[in-house]
Length: 249
Image (cartoon, rainbow, N blue to C red; front, side, top):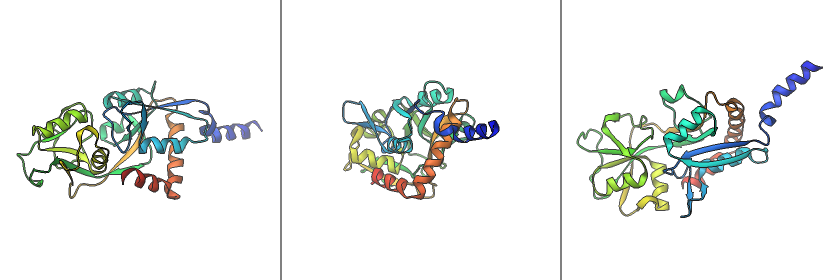
């Protein structure tokens, strides 16, 4: 009888061991629409696709979700430690990160692209004279045609990197098409549709984004099991696709 009770406890543990607890989640302070960004100018309300997916996963579960946007390197470092923050949103995988994090099923797929001033000539992959910019802490390994030495990542946020682009200190900003399109649609950080153009890089594979958990986090495996189960259900019934379309179109 006691053995049966123990088996039942272990089976149900992921569903209730964390019930009533708070899961602290972080994303990048630079904002990364449509994944996560501030709604309005007061910088108080955090919205976006990642936020919607998390709330959908944990609705009616008893879990409290607290989301904060931090400098991206700090967000990853905090989640890796597994202390104050348990989940990082919209994380792409790299060999280095594989040793530090557990990853959920992918819930967002992104297309490598380039942003440039409309006055610029079309991008050619074999051009070695064009300068490329990015944001400090972002993962540019999916841009396989460029080495890290070719990418200027001294900018700490979008405002800084867009300023570089606007004053022609770089020719192209490396950014995923879906992110760039949303930035233009929201007109965030001086992104203007009539000034900037967005190009897909032909031949580059789409990049999956995941929820990430520190490998040593106390609850990472339990929370990961819950998230993966719910993501599978949302994929199967079409809700995840509907949420993606709503956020990216």
